[in-house]
Amino acid sequence: MQIITVKNVEKVIGQEKILKNINLIINKGEFVSIVGPSGSGKSTLLYILGLLDIPTSGEVVVEESPVVFKDKDRLANLRNKKFGFVFQFHYLINELTLEENVMVPMLKANVDKKTAKERALTLLEKLGLKGKENRKPYQISGGEQQRVSIARALSNNPDILIADEPTGNLDSKNTEKVMEIFTQINHEGKTIIMVTHEMDLAEKTDRIVKMKDGEIVEEIKVNYPHL
Ligand SMILES: Nc1ncnc2c1ncn2[C@@H]1O[C@H](COP(=O)(O)OP(=O)(O)OP(=O)(O)O)[C@@H](O)[C@H]1O
Ligand SMILES: [Mg+2]
Image (cartoon, rainbow, N blue to C red; front, top):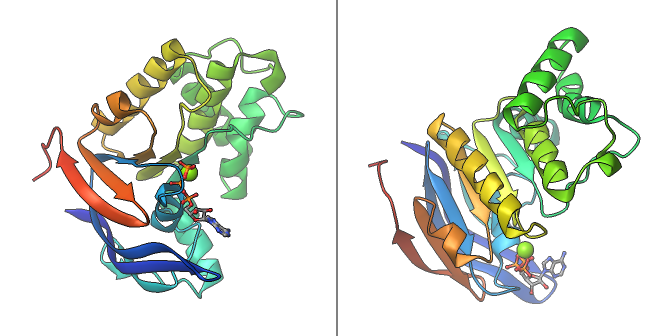
C-alpha cells in the first residue's frame, strides 16, 4: 500500500531546476534510502516528501489525499501528525533537559503534560538513555544527542520518519546504534525515508533510490517484503 506518491514533481529555484520529473512511490512500512552525489537534490526531495518544502509543479499524495501546499494550516497539521524528522545536526534546545526536549512536540500537539512526560521517559528509555533524562544536551555525547533527537521525532508517534543524513556526524559505533534503532522502529511498522552518503547503510534498507543532477537515475530493491 502506498503511503506517499510523488508524481512528476519539479523544483525550480531561480534559474536552476533542482528536481526534474520526479516520480516515486513510498510503500507503507518500507525503509527507503536516498543516495547520490552532493548537490544532486536528495535533501530537496526529502523535504518535499516530508511536506517541509513545496514543489514548483507536480503532485504529492499522502495516503490517497493530494497535498494542498497552499493551505498552510492543514499542511502543518498533516506534517505534525504524520511525520517525524531527524537531521544531521540534532537541533536540541540546550536550556531544556532531555526529557523536556522530547516533550516539546507533544506539548505543541496539546498532549497533557503528565502523558507527555511519561511518554518522553518511555522513549528515552527505549533509546538507551534511562537515568539521563534530567541532563541538558551539552551534558551527553554526540551519539546520545542524536538518540534524543530520534526520541523527539517519535514523540507524537508518526507513521513516517524522515531522516537527512542522521549519522553524518557520528562515529561508526553510534552510526550502527542509530541504524539498529531505525531497523527496530521500521519492524514496529514505521515507514522510514533516509538520505545517506554511506552506501553500506543504504544497503541495509529495503530500497535504494539513487539520484543524480536532480533526477532519480536508479532504484535498487535490496530487501523487499512489501509487495
Ligand atoms: N534554497 C536554495 N536556493 C538555491 N539553491 C538551492 C537551495 N536549496 C538547494 N539548492 C541547490 O539545489 C541543489 C540540490 O540541493 P540539495 O540540498 O537537495 O542537495 P543534496 O543532494 O542534499 O546535497 P548534499 O549531499 O550536499 O546534502 C544544489 O545545487 C543546491 O545548491
Ligand atoms: Mg543534503
